[in-house]
Structure formats: C-alpha cells, structure tokens
Image 1: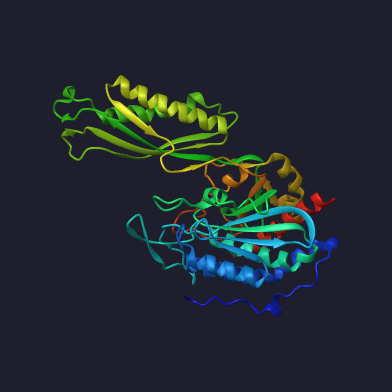
Image 2: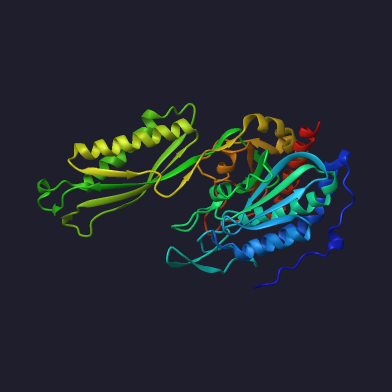
Length: 434
C-alpha cells in the first residue's frame, strides 16, 4: 500500500471560529486546504476501488476523521464510514454525503496519478478508474470535516459525515449503496434533519454550481423481458411463433410510451432497450429472446405509468403474435427520483449564490441520469447540486463525459465545493437556531 502523506498541521492550522464571520473563516480555511484536498483526491484516484470493496479508501477516511476528534462508525453498509461531529450548542443534525466507489473502466488520461488498478468484476478482470469523480467527493468532504471540526465549540447542532460505498451499484447478488445505509439506520441516532450532497461535473465549467429544485435526476428501473415462441427452421417461418419478430414489435411499441403516454410538457422520460439476445444460427428461428433495458422518469406518477404500460404492451404484443412474455421490473436496480425539496432549495439558494457569486449559480434542466442520493431524500429533505469540473473555456459538448476512459476533472474547482458544503451546513444551523 502506498503511504498517504498529509500536509503538516502547522500549514493548515486556522484562527478561532467567529460566529459573525464564519463565511470569511470558511473561505480562508478552504483556500489553505486546497493543496491537501488535491493531494487526497490524487491518491484516491490512483487507488480506486469498486463498490463494496472500498477498504483502503474507507480506512484512510476513518483514520483521518478520528484524528479530528470526530466519532467514527465503520463497516456501515459493508465498507461505509460515518462520522459524527457534535457541536457545542444545540441545533439540528445536518448530514453531508460523499460516495467512494470507482468503476470498471480502464483509464486513458495522461496524468501522473492515473489508475493502473485491475480488479475482478462479474468474473472478468477489468481496469478500475474513478471515472465519475467520486474520488473528488471524498477529498472535498474530508476538507469540510477539517474545517467544521475546527469550529466544533461554536456549531449550533451536529454534523453527520456519510462516506458511502457502492453508489454505482453493488456487485451481483449483494446489497449496497445508499439504500443499504438507510436500511442500517444511517439517518438515525442522531436523527438527521436535512442532507446535502454534491457531484462534480466534467461538463460544467469550473467555478460554477448548477442546481434544480424538485426532480433533478431521474428515477431508474432496469427491466428484463423474456419472449417465448415456438422454434422452427428459418425456411419455414409459418411453422414458428417467431420471438425475434415479436421482440422487434415490442421494442417499437415501447417507444410510444414517451411519444403518446407521457406529458412531455411537464417531464421527460426514457425507455431504452440496451441488449437483445436470441438464437445462434442464421436458419433457425429460436424458441426464446431475452431483452434488457432501462427506464428513466422525473416523477413518481410517471414512473408508475411507465411500469404499467411496459407490462401491458409487452404481454399484449406477445399475445397478438401467439407468443408469451414475462416482464421483470425492476430486474436488479431501482433508484427513486433525486428530488430536491423545493422549500429547502429556495431557502439555501442564497448560500450557494453568496459562496460562488450569483452569476455562477445556474438553474439547470433535469437530467435522465440517476443517483442513489435519492434514497436519503426519500426520508429527509435534501439538496443535491453539481460542482463545475470542466476547465474554463471548455466545450461541454466535447468535454469527456462521466463513465468514460477519458473522464477528466479540473482540480481548481474543489475549493468551491468545500466552501459550499461548509456554508450550507452553517447557514442551515444558523436558520434553525434563531
């Protein structure tokens, strides 16, 4: 294991916290911590770990939180770490979350700290890369923990630091991620009043923050469709019940859900078939075809409607062809809508604007990507926002996207993330202590 070096404490020791000037204090401390946060991120980037296997990462996090005098719980949801910082004054419990896992992606970025890690994933050896920015999330929240712990005696409430495994999904056959953390009581003892989270974004310019009240990221359900017909020689299709043709009809009919059943003036939605498998020879009509797909929705009613329509279309289309079909939805994955509480978002928007500058806080459209931060927001009010990581002047249409081998983040944006998370915590506490 490569040793992780920390900057000498003397270089990052800060003046006492002042209730009347905490934003200025946060700013000074975050600026002083910039090199340390970047060093943490580079170390995590060079040593990524897949979901439910974040042993090294969680060990470093737990050790550092303990060094700050923060109460630490380990082994939460397998490899998760929870830190509890009890302030010197009564007030609410504010949770802050960072995800820790990497992805089965082989890195192509030419940086000195590029990952060369290999691991087993679904029975195959794969490259591992922090190809979604979770390494930066961990480093930023460690910086936040440093600053807020230095203000402990003046904090009006408690801060719960949640370092979460397996946001990208648990290994096959395992539970994991935010859902398991909630199940194991991460929002209790003490009971969380509000939760904040951020996600670095490679296609938002560094120095900017993007947010959206309400449905900000989509609910996701994967599904599996099995179409069963009657096998026959390809020269005599009238002897078959062809599951290939039936599957083609199903695929096309499913697209009418978005075009004819969804009110597109209110919300977007997606039905995608990502794989289709059936048969093994050109002149044999197979007995069975299997399809896998995903749906994305931005409201709970739309999610319910999509599920019902998929089942109806699949079963009736199959029946019309003389075939049968089975639908499993969700098949293995379900995340709710990432829903930013509108009232809370309105109250905290001035904090983001004061931190980044009003001109740098952007209202963004909803996206059809999904986030398991949504499981926390099902239980308590929350805000999940995006932090710019694209170099200044970059083109978001050509910047390497998340989950790709060329994913790249400008590290100069990390300090803004540290400041934003600190200020959201302190301002929320101030609001509740009045």
